[in-house]
Amino acid sequence: MERMNGADMKSIVFRADANPEIGMGHIMRCLSIADAFSGDYNVLFILADKSPAKIISDRGYESMVLGSDYRNPDDEEAFWPKEITPDLIIVDSYFVTDDYMSFLQKRCGILVYVDDLIEHPFKVDVVINYNAYADAEKYQNLYEKAGIDEPKLMIGTDYVPLRSDFYNVPNKITSPEVKDVLISTGGADPMHLAIDMVKALSSDDDKKFNFHFLIGAMNSDKKEIYSASEDKANVIIHENVRDMRALISSMDIILSASGSTLYEVCACGIPLITFVMADNQILGADSFDKRGLAVFAGDLRNEKREDRANLLLEKIYHVSDDYQLRKSMAETMRKLVDGQGARKIVQVLSDIERSSN
Image (cartoon, rainbow, N blue to C red; front, side):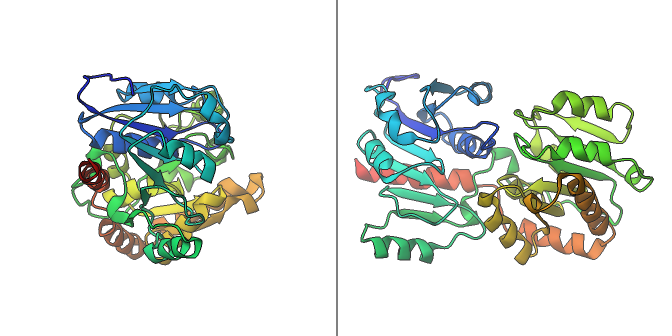
């Protein structure tokens, strides 16, 4: 791999994508892992298209755009420069195939797959699944049934790859009164939930709260959201947030799509309401609900667009009225995530890399 900071440094490639269809989650968790390498490796992100390139650059990393189709990774071999042969490749995509993983395995020292689905036994060196529902035994059964050597497994919430500012978050006392509510609808918001909720805020009950909307980089409704919120003093819009921990910690309730954001909220111990917008969010939302980590507002794909905003607002009112529920939820959340997952991932991968030499 072409060196960026010196010929003797180790190199790592992250192969992930982000766009309005798949959101920002894959890229954001890879960025957290990249940060935890702390300058010990040359880092390069390889992308199908340029959609997330600026976000990666703003975090201080280089990227290479292949000009390929993220849905068809088997066609990428023709796009990869031959000199890209890093020590580590970390893949974070739902579209990978056995052939694609075999191609990557030949291009690197150690191949790592970040998985959420527990559906297929890819031939890789390491599998990471940090989700609350992750189960090492299921992976062991998958690999045993397929007759494939089991990779090194990093399973469970010890490995949640959060940014370093979520390490050792001070405990926040749950207030009996709810004042500030943060609404996070993902990097792209394909269901247009943010704009629908801003428009729905019209009753006297709504005026009891400050509604903070976290607007993602790929939200296509930005201009309309700002316009619709101009005459609503209790609506605050947040974009390009530099200190996400401070924003989350300042809230009394968080409403968020099921995804990596849930673990940031856990680290801060803020009462949580979650919902589903895609198949890959179902397991996480169900697990959080059953473990008392969140109130589940349902799979919004089963609701009419005109009903979704009011359904979510009703959940907010319900949770705000139940102090004991919020207090119990916050206490349970803080026990789940310590914020050091990215560091633990890097330590394990560094140990594997050293032992392989």
